[in-house]
Length: 469
Image (cartoon, rainbow, N blue to C red; front, side):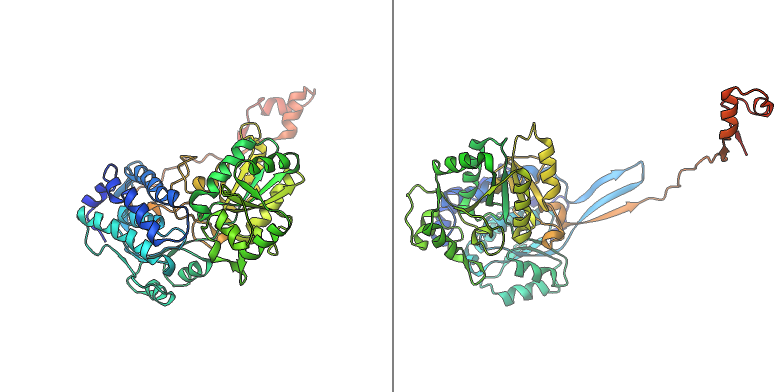
């Protein structure tokens, strides 16, 4: 844990010193030899681009010492580090998530020990080591970042329960996140996604298809915010379908659909073999032939429940496509998909956002997700700052109480500090209390009506002059 609020390390976490930390060419070559899933040409950019954006965003943010001082009310807010953090890293984003967690830990003067997924231990530990070497060069202690060389469920549990761990920052499957919250330690865990996309009749169809294809092919769909289902209103369904088919989307037919459905799930859960694989390889696994330029496999299905494999989170370039009678029916289907597996995570709507504010509001009211994206590719939009600069950049996305998480926003440095409030004594403001005032409605009515003979009203009570008692 760093103790100096003016640490050289803190100042070093800003461009232009970031690019040498993670050379793109080196990262691409290393990942190609050590990971068997994801899209190589986007994997390195997924690691470097969001993190460059993140560092640019946080470089002026105060995370140590006095955060704010209010002389009017006599308060001072001071930031202190959490301590040692246990970082649980998933197999789907082993490098980007590790680097992100290391950076927000360093920014807030915390140490972190990583527990990588066994399938991606080499990638996670290599990424952690790269950040550590850069931190040491900037003056950090040599043991500020650590990791488990040979991870296992047992070792992860031991790390989470270790008395020196002050916080668990968990990204992974539901079981691992639940274990983090059950450890007895403060924890920030994030839930699974099952992002539905609603397309209404006012949407720009070219934008819809281009955005979804860009998102689904970004690292072959392993981003947890990526689109899993698209629900299109009937009046534009055929147009959207045609646009997909001419731009790299392959619409599965008959036995082809059944063949892909059969390999999506395995033993009641997602088949790990399809995660992050290209559409052509998934088709090959299913025993079907598709054009070599196929980007996404699309299954036109009807059931919005667990019996439909395409309705689940797939973490691959596979997409469910539903036809809806109208906008309300489409939103209802999206609600069911969210509740089935992605509650609290992300949802998306394509509409004319300038002329359909009531639909944006309706969708926002109905969706139980922490991120509700409008006209945005979900993978890139969910991680923040790229398509809406107000959405904080992050590679760890909270899902709130809906998803069993402690936060419902993108995780950042502010979640890794303790805040102390210094409150100076101040006297409460004095209040001037007036006596109760009574109005006599009957007398006022009589006076204003000009009734003759009501001398009491005219002599004892001047018009519009109430009297205290």
